[in-house]
Length: 68
Image 1 (spheres, one colour):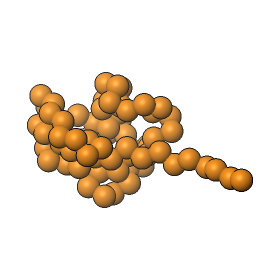
Image 2 (cartoon, helix red, strand yellow):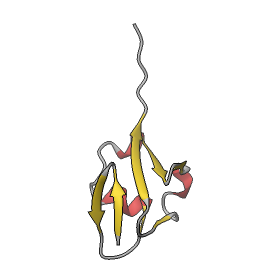
Image 3 (spheres, helix red, strand yellow):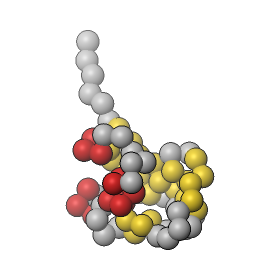
Image 4 (tube, helix red, strand yellow):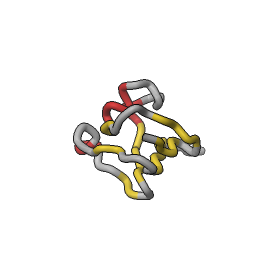
């Protein structure tokens, strides 16, 4: 299976859940990441059951607060 992960083509032997992707170390700071699949933001509660499929576009987003 091949997906686009953060703008890079990435291949896996089989489909995997978002949680499995995070556990494989493809994402830093797992506790702060928001995952978007095909432009849809996925609820953190669904990371363990949402299956990433061939040709999906996955973006890992980090929202940072800031100020003066």
